[in-house]
Length: 355
Image (cartoon, rainbow, N blue to C red; front, side, top):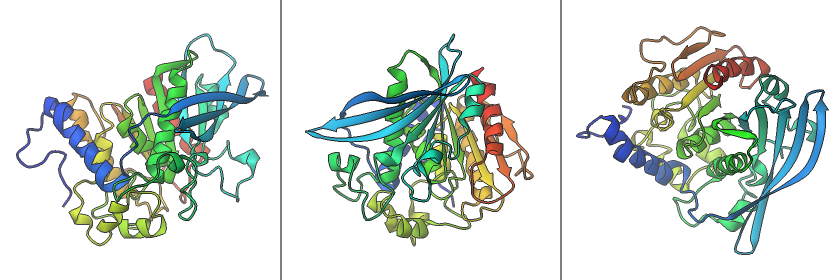
């Protein structure tokens, strides 16, 4: 049975949610799943490495974000694409990309993967690729470099790589907040697969993110764990033990003992905007469990007096988009991927809320 948004005996009111329960759930995810993010703030600096015009009306900047603490430092790059028309503050769409150091991808493609900057800038938004695996390498044997040299894992509740990528997402938001070019009230964050897990976790913790998009994030992302098909906790912690707090693997053969489930993570994003997408052939991620999680999160949106996709909305046909109030969903036909066709639907949702 899925745990409720509120524990037995708790009063399901907005005031109780805001003052007590939201923080309780966030703490449980930190302790049992993703690990605690380091509390010590490092020094953060930015340096423009390259600036060029890549289209008639698009400027690309390659920027290094460096964090320093105790004589040590770690860096990652962001690629910022902005339209020529800067007559207004620019809404920004951040894509967390943990695949940029994948040797199967050449350098020229790393900033194209999973996010069409041309379509985003054409809407008058900035497209920001955060190459977060520069800060935390996606390798179970070598991840201890980068940010983990500044903040090493110390116990079973210490942060893993997903949390480090989410933390890099927040440092990217810091950059946007430090630059008057960008609209602080309209910052979207997106991620695909493992990047989608990080985007959700970042948005749950960082309320400066006003809209989040999860693409096929599956297990320990958007999909509920209990009753899920495909990938389970035992699978993901065996293959990717560096992603989560070490404590999480203890639930591999007893998922029902988890004090949280992923619909509660989505609930932490309310009242902000949330979009989840799936792929019809992606049984490992399990589209129906991703949709179920989104529906269950509606309970928290309702506390705020807001509309969201709810239990009265059936699981949609393939290639059918659902948008209700603050949340949206679609299933694209095909395998595990994030495509330009997906982005057409994401941008419809973003434009609905950012115009």
